[in-house]
Length: 442
Image (cartoon, rainbow, N blue to C red; front, top):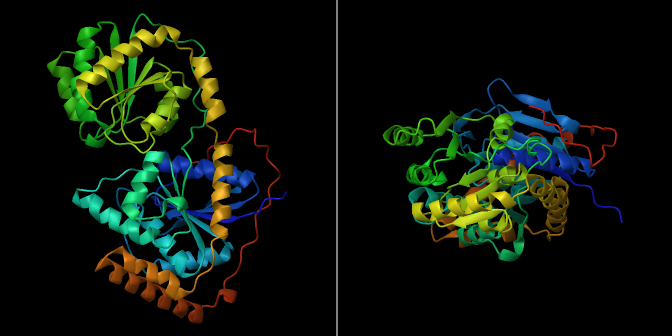
């Protein structure tokens, strides 16, 4: 049976040339959807002098709209002024499904809002976990509640992430699918010659911030070095907590046993991973943790804190979980050291290649798009009335915002009818086998 071909617009503030889990997810998912015969365009903000339309591998079209990042790679929230350009892209590319990524992305929220105003089906993927008590999380959860009030379908990267998103947004659980993150195993292969086990090397690659458990590392590393003279640490990453680790290294005279690499480019992550035996993740909160998949694909045994969606990532023989407590983490590392003789990096890599692959994720995402298109059409009053349930005062404000957005859209329709916007012809490329390795274009 022929599959329905979708025309998808991926939207997020986070995309190449910036690097991160969300950026990689959008790129590889888009590449696989193209290979399945769908049309995909990406919309993000400008990065430096990268503005306008660019093409990437397999004809992936990227709109770098001329907005500059405001804070943490996010564009400045404009609310209504972004409607004209979003509308133009939707009409030019004849989009059928709009797919927004990351709750922290301003552009994602605005694009989903405008798309629903125009009657498009929208899908949202949440890549992170948020709390409920601090001021930042409270405000972000209210924004998410507004965005998802009229979303067609949603995707989370783990069951823990799904529970978190449902609680934060009030979205019906039956609208939320769970599709895990994936690593490109072709980029993360074990070393041909394994490092000697006469010296045990523990690798840490992470942003050195509180949320990633940098404070735990300050206490764990000296204790492990004291108990095991043949253990050495390699720490890759940068952040405000880096100075704490450097002070710890000086205080305990561990300069020759703790190597600080600073920020590690994504293209060099594998070379750092294959120099070690154990990968240590000390995060205090994680929706999924793609770094664990990269380490496991390189054949490293993982020690991680038991938080968020981490317990769902790997089987028990590939990961050792510990409570986010220094003492428990030290015990977990000792257990990992004793398990090293039984670890076969090639077997681990083969298992990762079979279980986690982007083509499987693309096919599962394709099903979500099919469900989104089957959602019944509703009139304006039925759709905007959903926003009244977002709170006593916030609900009325959200309702007013959507009414103004609808009136602005109708004004644009009068000023520049859709028929006056030139539709772009589809780029036709020769068929590419699904077995070919994806090549990243930066």
